[in-house]
Image (cartoon, rainbow, N blue to C red; front, top):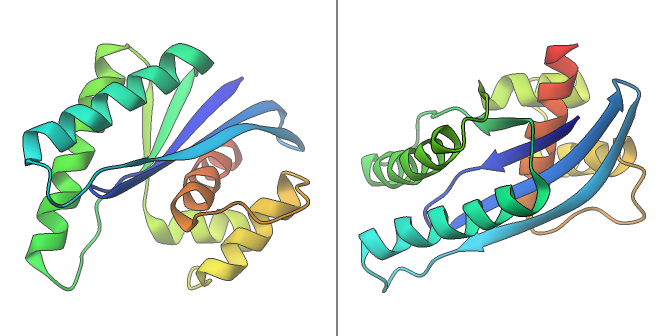
Length: 157
């Protein structure tokens, strides 16, 4: 089953596609990022996220999408921009009638490392190990998206 993991963000939305044959047999298909610039008007940034995510969905035809839940930031501006990006992502997924699953960051960390306070490097290392990659996926946003996809697999079996 093909799973799309998404790490939402207004500036950078990470995405990762994995194929699950069984809980113990997961393979990487592709990963990347959707980037928008601060100087672009908000509506165009959200349209760009929608357009590029639609391209990913059309190309890989995921059977499920896993996205990181909204969590608290130090600034209200950060949470608002994340909420806007999540809204565009959720709308795109729902218009494609793909089941959507949400996971909080702590659960993602536990699913990959067994430790809810794992740092980014530990998550990247586990993504590399579980997907049997030679190098850690970069940037962090794409690695996080792959971690979310793997969390969904570990949580759904």
